[in-house]
Amino acid sequence: MFVTGLLLAAESSPHLGVPWQLLAYHGEPLLGSTLETARECGFDQLIVTLGSGSSQVRDHVDLDGVRVVDSPHADTGSSSIVPALDAVDRRTDGVVVLLGDQPGITSATVWSLVAEVAGPATPLGISHYDDGPGHPVWCAREVFGDLGQLRSDDDLWHLTDQHPITQVDAIGNLPPRIRTWDDYRRTVSGHTPSPGPFAPGALEDPAPHIPLPTHPRRRRRTTH
Image (cartoon, rainbow, N blue to C red):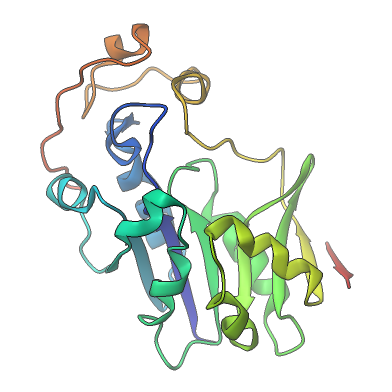
């Protein structure tokens, strides 16, 4: 089975005042961390979407081996999934959708999802955590037509009303997304940030001035 990974990283961060993609996370840019997890999944193809801050991200995040799709209109709510479909390999059986601002997702969760949904009878596969459904999400090729009609990336969840879904158990609670400074504080509070793209002292200010980084080196339930 040929599987494409699709990491969504085109949305801006109006509540942060700085590009969320470049926030320090374990000593590297946040997007660099989620990209590294995506690489560990061993996808046959890996695509990342970037928005209006594409040039900054390209300067500071290692994108080697990744197909980059620019989606500048994602800042206004347009779907970045739609333009990414044009870059999907024609051999792909389906895509696994991940979020670039959700670093807690693990490759083990992705592997569990793909193992359960392998086969033609699973148009949609959703990871189900202790506190509800979330990413990663599997979309088989048969739903690509509907994906192409999405008005926003959040509309992906509307497809669950149109297609049978397979819910695959994931360990623990939903990994948090980093969209505000409070999200960031909570996410990094479990470890001591290493010196990296953004200074830890920036957390004291809800809208700090932050220097840019240097380039880093890097069980199953079916419902209808």
